Image (cartoon, rainbow, N blue to C red; front, side, top):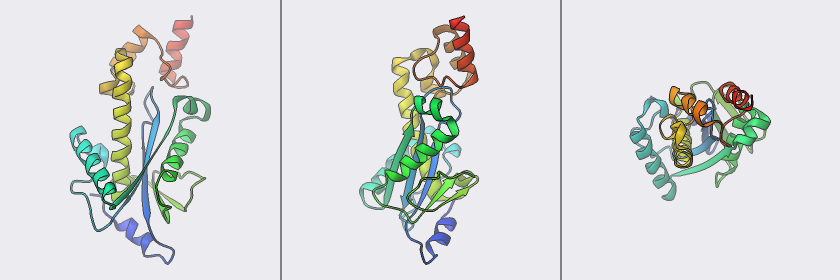
Length: 211
């Protein structure tokens, strides 16, 4: 289970202070934005059941999402959300678009953290604070786990809304990932403005339809 060990180690430093966790959702899908979240938790108020978003059900994530924003309203958490659009993914590539979304999430916090814990080995270069990459950070750090939940729920909700406009692809279920249903939708209905044109299955369908 994730805990506050990394946060407490950084906070104990003479330059320590508020520590934020940062994670993203949506690197791998064929459609939709990549979304990132930055979360600072009051380390005296651990939300019960908080864990890596991948280990939770959709209902558990939704319940924790609501609880985290309740904490934020009560002053026990700070939450920032950032995203990079499909156009930015196409222009920058998915790695750099993810770094941009993370940077935007940290910037969206109402306070400036002393340090950011970033899920994964890479950190955005232009942050307002020092940062440390943590491989499998959402399984180690409660702050990163909280960010993983916020990013995942925000993106899932966005894809569910897009599904109402583009129902052929099953985005309410697959969230834009390249499932069989999504691939079948691409073959039948073609490419939408929300598809990532640089991703191979989408590019192949573009070639087929243009040909």
